[in-house]
Length: 177
Ligand code: ADP
Image 1: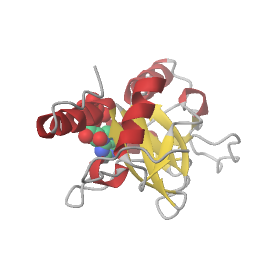
Image 2: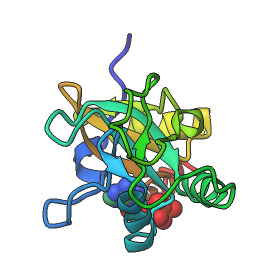
Image 3: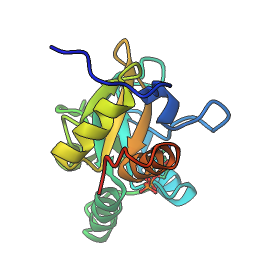
């Protein structure tokens, strides 16, 4: 493989991803640790289009990605069906749901709305490659990992802003249209 021509200042995925160092942490769902109320709070407290699902906050191991829209619809539907789903119902993105303790409300199983293989790159991936992947695969977002731990996210809009910045510096590099 030939060495590609690089930007003089080579930007990496870690330079473009959110959250920035000063930002609050990434808003993630855990695969079996939340209640319906926890998820609803996350939906109302943020405006993000989607949320990564991780094994646990401690591991930050990626399980999948869920769109905000699908979460909202699924929870609303479950509440309306009146099949016992309430604020304290536990939410599961896992394949199997453990038996719930006696007298607890039925669990809400949401594995079906999760993208099980969201696109990921490592934090050291060069941004020209990331931009290329977005263009070629038509991605809406890409998750950033380091040693298997989830670190951040880059959305299509983040890519467009990044490309616009580069274009200001170097008008010849039209990478995206
Ligand atoms: P867009 O980039 O199209 O506005 P979003 O509303 O999903 O899409 O994201 C807004 C900003 O927040 C982007 O810079 C993105 O990188 C970041 N972001 C997206 N999802 C999350 C999340 N779950 N937690 C933290 N930041 C996020």
